[in-house]
Length: 94
Image (cartoon, rainbow, N blue to C red; front, side):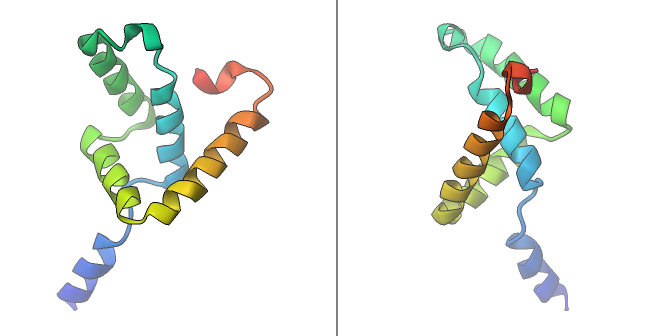
């Protein structure tokens, strides 16, 4: 029984897909002009993770999960594009 639970949990993503999408969208909103300031980007990421109540490690696990199932990235990006396009203003960045 324990092995079944271990394998069942391993295939489950650590973060809800919608929340992951919101975090991802926020992270890509970081201004390009500030990418040469890694300490500011790290602070920005910490703030985004705190905003959505997830850990940096869980975000990394989500990326690894999606990388292990590349077909999910296509679906993910389509949903993210639809989400952003559905916003009539830039309020999704707040």
